[in-house]
Image 1: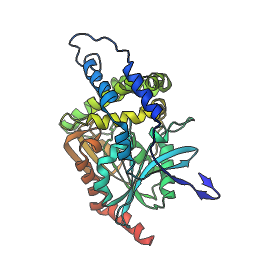
Image 2: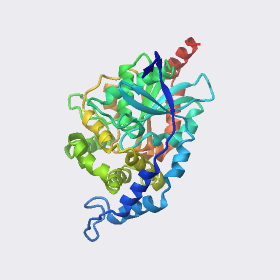
Image 3: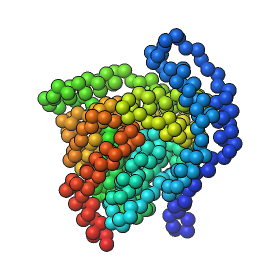
Length: 380
């Protein structure tokens, strides 16, 4: 946004109206619960007893104000890009010559995903952590077309406004796609892209001989492609329809996201109920269930190949695990790490592993490190 020829970046403070918190409490207290088949377990979906436990904690044990105060210790800002309000956290390293990194979350995550990696990564990097348009304090969106490429172009503009001429990008889930798209739309600016989620589709024409473990990974991908998860189908085909239920019912919003956390995390590295409820509260209190779901609808657009160096971290309990020979056909892979623990939400589950891998890619890889250093030296 321009005002008098100047780009406006405004400090932002989280301050949810008390009336919204009271309304949430009232709705939770009046939940109309379905019945459940005896000994159903997970056979029919999320277990009733566990959901009741989470809902009651959200209503009577969870303290949004305490988490809000903690979050407000971070430096939050907003700006308008391409007609859309953009919220972001901007943490500068004590090293003025540090490389900048833009960290991008996915669904059903938020900027909260990166809370536990801010401290270790900010020792070596300036961090920019935006909320995707349509998510949280960057939502809702009000027009068509906010796909991965458009988000990436917004990130390129954001980094330009902040004065970063060269920077890295990191993300998982949609954040991985956005980070790779950023490398495609701004290759002269992006020194490298690190992802902790990189789906690799079968390519019968590749003529590759895959290892037994790679064949197992590929079989899992084929199974997912043949049996599209229900949540994904609904968000990809009718995000507005499911949005009504999630925006009107806090328990609906709760189970929609809690199921993903339950199924996509490594049982050995669980995410606390408090952290999960803060993430879910963010969706509920900003009424962004529908607008965040629209990204799944919009995301089908193909993007240009990312020409910059790519680093990949593969976690054992993720939705799928990348097949390196297939990934190398599409990307300039310079760094590849395999971890025997951790799941889809790596920044929340195993922040120490992810932070170390990000640091290793951007600071230890000679090509990536050199690209960043040369530009920062020339900018002096």
